[in-house]
Amino acid sequence: MAKVSVIIPGAGSGIRFGDKQNKVFAKIAGKAMFLRTLEAFATRDDVCQTIFVASPADMEEIKENFGGHLGFMGISLVEGGLTRSQSVRNALAEVSEEAELICVHDAARPYVAQTWIDSVFAEAEKSGAALLAVPIHGTIKRADDKQSVAETLPRENFQGLWEAQTPQVFRRDILMRAYETGQDATDDAALVEALGQQVKLVPGDLRNVKVTTRKDLDFASAVLNTLPKPHESRLAHPFREDLG
Ligand code: CTP
Ligand code: MG
Image 1 (spheres, rainbow, N blue to C red):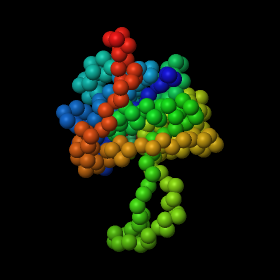
Image 2 (cartoon, protein in one colour):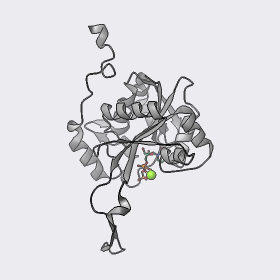
Image 3 (cartoon, rainbow, N blue to C red):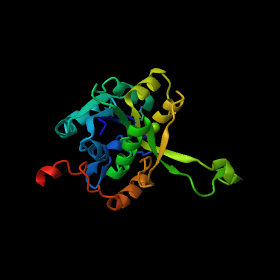
Image 4 (cartoon, helix red, strand yellow):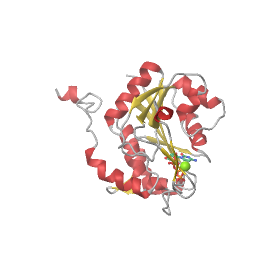
């Protein structure tokens, strides 16, 4: 089992969410969104390091209200930058020498099931670069500025299209090289693709929603109890053998 360092960028400001605070503090069934996301990774025994990237504007609140909890989970805190890529780049400087793979997962995707993480970690270990994504089905229309249909895209134009999600997981040297180019992109895989590296798509799940607006949070809260439970594996039960 490869050792994985996990970077959780949470240093945006959640403008489209529209709260006074960064959306990552929004509560889901009583728990802050970013804590749920962090817990999904920090509790795994293949994860050797978890780094939370926080906005300088949120640092004080995080240390004051969540410092104990983060310390207990062994989470490192890093300050984010003006773009998501800059936030990830800041965290890369802190990645442990021990890590063979680096996983990047948005703090704003709190509903990530262990089985989905298992599958993208396994593919990245095999091929060096992998992300969760969902195939785009249905009929896609382009709107005009009056929100009327301007065009229906021919099916063949979006055959083979997938919508990228996170986690996105890479061999350590590959992701480091991708970020050394100094480029920015909306996801990490795009920087790795630009190196000419093959990146594998691992079928994800629509429930792994990125919370952008409040409606996404309502959707996500509604599906919380339908997520696949961790399967019976040593990953999910690290002390199982000891228990006999
Ligand atoms: N993010 C980050 N650093 C930035 C911008 C974004 O770490 N400078 C993080 C966000 O906190 C989020 C993830 O990247 O977990 C995806 O970004 P997005 O969903 O766009 O979040 P925000 O930028 O916070 O939201 P908005 O664009 O509506 O302001
Ligand atoms: Mg944003």
